[in-house]
Image 1: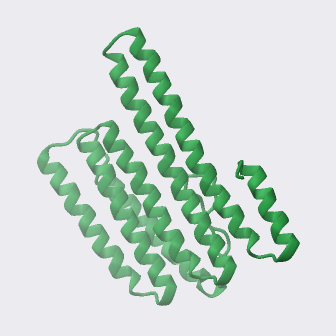
Image 2: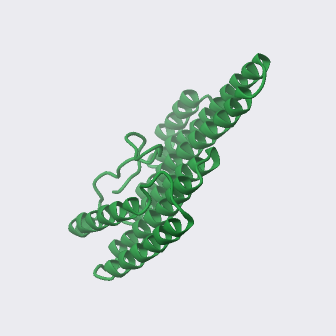
Length: 231
Protein backbone atom coordinates (compact mmCIF):
# COMPACT_ATOMS: atom_id res chain seq x y z
CA UNK A 1 0.00 0.00 0.00
CA UNK A 2 1.42 3.39 -0.95
CA UNK A 3 0.03 5.93 1.42
CA UNK A 4 0.68 9.58 1.99
CA UNK A 5 1.12 10.56 5.58
CA UNK A 6 1.81 13.82 7.30
CA UNK A 7 5.37 14.45 8.39
CA UNK A 8 8.66 15.29 6.74
CA UNK A 9 8.24 17.50 3.75
CA UNK A 10 10.16 18.94 0.84
CA UNK A 11 10.46 22.67 1.27
CA UNK A 12 7.20 24.00 2.69
CA UNK A 13 5.09 21.12 1.46
CA UNK A 14 3.20 18.90 3.89
CA UNK A 15 3.25 15.94 1.56
CA UNK A 16 5.19 13.12 3.16
CA UNK A 17 6.75 9.90 1.95
CA UNK A 18 4.63 6.89 0.92
CA UNK A 19 4.78 3.62 2.84
CA UNK A 20 5.49 0.15 1.41
CA UNK A 21 3.04 -0.68 -1.42
CA UNK A 22 0.79 -3.74 -1.23
CA UNK A 23 1.78 -4.61 -4.79
CA UNK A 24 5.47 -5.30 -4.26
CA UNK A 25 5.97 -6.23 -7.90
CA UNK A 26 6.55 -2.58 -8.73
CA UNK A 27 9.03 -1.92 -5.90
CA UNK A 28 12.19 -2.22 -8.01
CA UNK A 29 10.64 -0.07 -10.72
CA UNK A 30 9.74 2.58 -8.18
CA UNK A 31 13.33 2.74 -6.96
CA UNK A 32 14.32 3.44 -10.56
CA UNK A 33 11.54 6.00 -10.91
CA UNK A 34 12.65 7.84 -7.79
CA UNK A 35 16.23 7.92 -9.04
CA UNK A 36 15.08 9.44 -12.33
CA UNK A 37 12.85 11.95 -10.53
CA UNK A 38 15.72 13.02 -8.29
CA UNK A 39 18.04 13.54 -11.23
CA UNK A 40 15.40 15.55 -13.09
CA UNK A 41 14.64 17.62 -10.01
CA UNK A 42 18.29 18.51 -9.57
CA UNK A 43 18.58 19.47 -13.22
CA UNK A 44 15.52 21.71 -12.96
CA UNK A 45 16.81 23.37 -9.79
CA UNK A 46 20.16 24.09 -11.41
CA UNK A 47 18.38 26.03 -14.14
CA UNK A 48 16.67 28.28 -11.61
CA UNK A 49 19.36 28.89 -8.99
CA UNK A 50 20.22 32.49 -9.74
CA UNK A 51 18.51 34.93 -7.42
CA UNK A 52 18.43 37.54 -10.18
CA UNK A 53 18.43 36.90 -13.89
CA UNK A 54 17.95 38.72 -17.13
CA UNK A 55 15.02 38.06 -19.41
CA UNK A 56 17.27 36.01 -21.69
CA UNK A 57 18.53 33.94 -18.76
CA UNK A 58 14.97 33.41 -17.61
CA UNK A 59 13.89 32.21 -21.06
CA UNK A 60 16.90 29.91 -21.29
CA UNK A 61 16.09 28.39 -17.91
CA UNK A 62 12.46 28.01 -18.94
CA UNK A 63 13.53 26.16 -22.09
CA UNK A 64 15.71 23.95 -19.92
CA UNK A 65 12.75 23.00 -17.76
CA UNK A 66 10.73 22.06 -20.84
CA UNK A 67 13.61 19.98 -22.22
CA UNK A 68 14.06 18.26 -18.87
CA UNK A 69 10.40 17.35 -18.74
CA UNK A 70 10.52 15.94 -22.27
CA UNK A 71 13.47 13.74 -21.34
CA UNK A 72 11.78 12.64 -18.14
CA UNK A 73 8.63 11.54 -19.95
CA UNK A 74 10.73 9.65 -22.48
CA UNK A 75 12.48 7.81 -19.64
CA UNK A 76 9.09 6.72 -18.31
CA UNK A 77 8.54 4.65 -21.45
CA UNK A 78 10.90 2.03 -20.03
CA UNK A 79 8.20 1.20 -17.46
CA UNK A 80 4.74 -0.28 -17.83
CA UNK A 81 1.44 -0.29 -16.00
CA UNK A 82 1.10 1.76 -12.86
CA UNK A 83 4.87 2.18 -12.55
CA UNK A 84 4.77 4.12 -15.80
CA UNK A 85 1.85 6.24 -14.57
CA UNK A 86 3.76 7.07 -11.38
CA UNK A 87 6.85 8.01 -13.37
CA UNK A 88 4.84 10.33 -15.63
CA UNK A 89 3.15 11.94 -12.62
CA UNK A 90 6.54 12.54 -10.99
CA UNK A 91 7.95 14.02 -14.18
CA UNK A 92 4.95 16.32 -14.55
CA UNK A 93 5.08 17.33 -10.91
CA UNK A 94 8.78 18.16 -11.11
CA UNK A 95 8.13 20.30 -14.16
CA UNK A 96 5.39 22.28 -12.39
CA UNK A 97 7.58 22.81 -9.33
CA UNK A 98 10.53 23.87 -11.48
CA UNK A 99 8.38 26.39 -13.38
CA UNK A 100 6.99 27.84 -10.16
CA UNK A 101 10.46 28.07 -8.60
CA UNK A 102 11.81 29.75 -11.72
CA UNK A 103 9.05 32.37 -11.61
CA UNK A 104 9.79 32.98 -7.94
CA UNK A 105 13.48 33.52 -8.68
CA UNK A 106 12.70 35.80 -11.63
CA UNK A 107 10.00 37.88 -9.94
CA UNK A 108 10.30 37.35 -6.21
CA UNK A 109 7.06 38.02 -4.33
CA UNK A 110 4.77 36.55 -1.69
CA UNK A 111 2.41 35.40 -4.44
CA UNK A 112 5.23 33.65 -6.29
CA UNK A 113 6.36 31.87 -3.14
CA UNK A 114 2.78 30.80 -2.51
CA UNK A 115 2.58 29.32 -6.01
CA UNK A 116 5.75 27.31 -5.36
CA UNK A 117 4.19 25.79 -2.24
CA UNK A 118 0.97 25.00 -4.10
CA UNK A 119 2.92 23.43 -6.97
CA UNK A 120 4.74 21.18 -4.52
CA UNK A 121 1.48 20.17 -2.87
CA UNK A 122 -0.23 19.41 -6.17
CA UNK A 123 2.78 17.50 -7.49
CA UNK A 124 2.90 15.35 -4.37
CA UNK A 125 -0.83 14.75 -4.56
CA UNK A 126 -0.71 13.66 -8.20
CA UNK A 127 2.02 11.12 -7.47
CA UNK A 128 0.28 9.91 -4.33
CA UNK A 129 -2.95 9.28 -6.20
CA UNK A 130 -1.14 7.18 -8.78
CA UNK A 131 0.54 5.16 -6.03
CA UNK A 132 -2.85 4.53 -4.44
CA UNK A 133 -3.73 2.56 -7.58
CA UNK A 134 -1.43 -0.19 -6.29
CA UNK A 135 -4.21 -1.07 -3.84
CA UNK A 136 -7.95 -1.73 -3.91
CA UNK A 137 -11.06 -1.55 -1.76
CA UNK A 138 -10.96 0.26 1.58
CA UNK A 139 -7.15 0.25 1.57
CA UNK A 140 -7.20 2.31 -1.61
CA UNK A 141 -9.99 4.55 -0.28
CA UNK A 142 -7.94 5.35 2.82
CA UNK A 143 -4.87 5.98 0.70
CA UNK A 144 -6.81 8.49 -1.42
CA UNK A 145 -8.17 10.27 1.65
CA UNK A 146 -4.68 10.49 3.13
CA UNK A 147 -3.32 11.90 -0.11
CA UNK A 148 -6.07 14.52 -0.14
CA UNK A 149 -5.48 15.36 3.53
CA UNK A 150 -1.77 15.91 2.89
CA UNK A 151 -2.53 18.20 -0.05
CA UNK A 152 -5.16 20.12 1.93
CA UNK A 153 -2.69 20.62 4.76
CA UNK A 154 0.04 21.87 2.46
CA UNK A 155 -2.26 24.29 0.65
CA UNK A 156 -3.81 25.52 3.90
CA UNK A 157 -0.37 26.30 5.31
CA UNK A 158 0.62 28.02 2.06
CA UNK A 159 -2.49 30.19 2.15
CA UNK A 160 -1.90 31.11 5.79
CA UNK A 161 1.70 32.08 5.04
CA UNK A 162 0.59 34.19 2.08
CA UNK A 163 -2.04 36.07 4.08
CA UNK A 164 0.37 36.64 6.95
CA UNK A 165 3.13 37.87 4.63
CA UNK A 166 0.82 40.31 2.87
CA UNK A 167 -0.61 41.60 6.13
CA UNK A 168 2.88 42.12 7.56
CA UNK A 169 4.03 43.89 4.40
CA UNK A 170 1.11 46.29 4.59
CA UNK A 171 1.63 46.89 8.30
CA UNK A 172 5.31 47.69 7.77
CA UNK A 173 4.29 50.70 5.72
CA UNK A 174 1.64 52.03 8.07
CA UNK A 175 0.86 52.66 11.74
CA UNK A 176 1.12 50.63 14.93
CA UNK A 177 -2.60 49.99 14.71
CA UNK A 178 -1.98 48.37 11.34
CA UNK A 179 0.55 46.06 12.97
CA UNK A 180 -2.10 44.85 15.38
CA UNK A 181 -4.47 44.31 12.48
CA UNK A 182 -1.81 42.35 10.63
CA UNK A 183 -1.26 40.12 13.63
CA UNK A 184 -4.99 39.56 13.82
CA UNK A 185 -5.15 38.59 10.14
CA UNK A 186 -2.24 36.23 10.60
CA UNK A 187 -3.98 34.54 13.52
CA UNK A 188 -7.20 34.22 11.49
CA UNK A 189 -5.27 32.65 8.62
CA UNK A 190 -3.65 30.11 10.91
CA UNK A 191 -7.03 29.23 12.45
CA UNK A 192 -8.50 28.70 8.97
CA UNK A 193 -5.58 26.47 8.05
CA UNK A 194 -6.00 24.43 11.23
CA UNK A 195 -9.72 24.00 10.51
CA UNK A 196 -9.08 22.82 6.94
CA UNK A 197 -6.49 20.31 8.13
CA UNK A 198 -8.75 19.06 10.92
CA UNK A 199 -11.57 18.43 8.43
CA UNK A 200 -9.23 16.54 6.11
CA UNK A 201 -7.84 14.43 8.96
CA UNK A 202 -11.38 13.61 10.08
CA UNK A 203 -12.18 12.39 6.56
CA UNK A 204 -9.20 10.02 6.74
CA UNK A 205 -10.19 8.70 10.17
CA UNK A 206 -13.79 8.18 9.07
CA UNK A 207 -12.69 6.34 5.93
CA UNK A 208 -10.60 3.97 8.02
CA UNK A 209 -13.72 3.05 9.99
CA UNK A 210 -15.23 1.56 6.82
CA UNK A 211 -12.89 -1.39 7.27
CA UNK A 212 -15.14 -2.45 10.17
CA UNK A 213 -18.81 -3.26 10.61
CA UNK A 214 -21.56 -3.11 13.23
CA UNK A 215 -20.76 -1.75 16.68
CA UNK A 216 -17.03 -1.70 15.99
CA UNK A 217 -17.57 0.64 13.06
CA UNK A 218 -19.99 2.82 15.05
CA UNK A 219 -17.50 3.10 17.92
CA UNK A 220 -14.74 3.94 15.45
CA UNK A 221 -16.80 6.76 13.92
CA UNK A 222 -17.80 8.10 17.35
CA UNK A 223 -14.16 8.16 18.42
CA UNK A 224 -13.22 10.00 15.23
CA UNK A 225 -15.96 12.56 15.84
CA UNK A 226 -14.82 13.12 19.41
CA UNK A 227 -11.20 13.44 18.36
CA UNK A 228 -11.85 16.04 15.66
CA UNK A 229 -14.74 17.88 17.31
CA UNK A 230 -17.48 16.69 14.97
CA UNK A 231 -21.09 16.17 15.98
